[in-house]
Image (cartoon, rainbow, N blue to C red; front, side, top):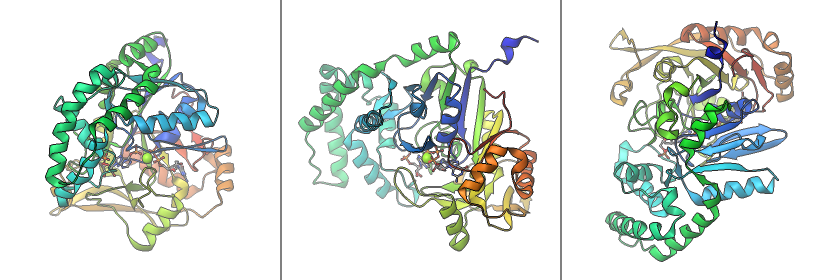
Length: 439
Ligand code: GDP
Ligand code: IMO
Ligand code: MG
């Protein structure tokens, strides 16, 4: 056997649901064995939480390799609010963290008018609104696609920024005034503010595609950090109730310049239940006391907006779709501890429409809302303190409750996909590794 064939130098982390699956925790976990961590999609709509060495980090833009002082790259597929990025750099500096950040010169910039339009467009969409984070994500990607966009390269060259921004500003002002005739932001102020951001960020800016390809070719180990989740993907999610980028493995090549053949392995992260922030049909959604219990036990409040997350039973039917779309090699199950004390547990294994079992996840919102989820029931496990869960994690798989073993085995059987790790607490070490040779 050729040993080189089995060597895994690059691994992609993707969420297989509607986001917040625990990607940040596992990017940080795998960063322990990596040289570089790269973000390839989204902007500060993402909120990735890492609990390590007694510190709780909440990143919106900076890749989750930062606590370990790894090299971190924001790829061209991301949209960047420079103010937020500078704040994150500052907060890491306050913690005396060494910052080794590279920012793609071709990532697109979020301006204040994008955020205003995000809010206004949501209002006019009415029932079709996604319940966005109002961070200007959609309007910035729209400008990118229509070739109005302003990129990091422009930001750090004021002589390029000024005329481009002037044209864009005037266009956006007219648009905003359709909704809000009193909007009166000043071009001069925005230009001055963003010129300063450009000066601050200039030292971090490079051609990341060339740099990263060279790094991979020289044997560096790289983790690709997905933001959002497969069901929020612009092309393969529940449109229009999702985000504006390719929130799955398919976004990596476009969002970094790394060709697909250099992505060695793809790891899908799922929660032991499902959560969703924002609008759109959620077939396994729970309400009232049960939802409240899971929300509290899993601390299900949005990292970016603080909104209570909607919660429901694990939906393996839409995850099966994500496994196909992403070519998932192995999965990680998080937040198993957060289902403690719930009995019985339910797991959705398929959808029924007009008395027929569907073969694949129906994608269209209009069909999904007519479907009925099919469930299997499982015995739950008892409540424990977080210290007890941490101790169990140290002891390993044999120490988890038997009922949890049955639940985990059922996920593996339904998905016909191996499980790489289990997570039974928020801390880096509250992790049970089932595949030591993953990366
Ligand atoms: P991401 O967007 O996919 O990175 O996920 P978030 O960070 O937005 O949300 C996941 C939340 O669950 C964070 O608060 C994590 O600290 C927390 N978390 C991750 N894994 C576990 C786990 O196994 N148990 C518990 N209790 N919390 C977890
Ligand atoms: P992470 O990376 C959960 C949701 C919003 C909204 C829709 C569109 O932490 O998993 P946008 O602001 O992107 O235009 O909003 O997508 N959304 C997320 N939900 N986790 C996220 O990121 C999300 N990023 C966007 O709630 O429904
Ligand atoms: Mg999140």
